[in-house]
Image (cartoon, rainbow over all chains, first blue to last red):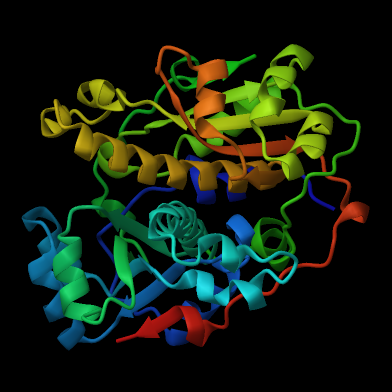
Length: 196
Length: 196
């Protein structure tokens, strides 16, 4: 039965959680990457379409390929991160709908309509990027999402055949919380919410 | 200090959580809506831009205005839901960047460039929609996200001056778990993940 999670858990997920790009030396093991996927995969997507794909950059060689595609402000911190994930989407995700959503011919809804496929994939893969961030926090990891990069350059470096298309980068690791700057503000309830 | 959350918590958030559109009679109080916002607001967005806006539909009158904009398959379940939130984005979100992100002139980066503003707003408001779903689960609520609606019709009904633009609808309430159909599959690790 679901209930309100404890204040400590709510703080770990939301209230005290911070984007972070400064990490301890502790590596992120492949078993943790598998646990991360085994949590985030359960997050909901339209027609259970799961368009997101995840390229985990572990090796120094792959990291060197990534760095030139980053905006200048993201380069040094990403060079030093233990793990970086390229959250991407698969522009052919709808080919898997017959297995993933057997209840309805959703593949037929998308076939041959790239003007539907790409917005669907971007919106739902963005939801999945957020599931990854919160799943990482659930596993005691810190996440540092980055929009400042050249998506075409990342795609050319890692997805030259167009098989996946990059959407968001996220540095991952065990955070050094001493290095965090002051937290930014947030919009007040009345600025962001309306009740009717 | 962050650590791996308990199996029961991971199940509530991910492993056993389900999209649900069948709810108990129990209403969702305004105090719970405020708690929900006070959690989800902490989720990260680019430049702390927070483009998402949330229209919570509580009254029967507002619900009647919403229903014609829904696809046929979403109408009955939404008519019966205790609470529905229209997750939207504010196309003028960048006007708040000087207060929300004082470190850098990010407003100047977007001013007069609608071709940058809208994709930024859609991607980041989608992240925020996912924060809302997981914040709802953290408070013991069930969420039923819906992409099947006519966004232009929702906008005409609720945002006639173009102040907000709808992105995703989510039914919210205390779920009737007896009514859930079988769960859909998920892509295997090897189908969705690559390590380099």
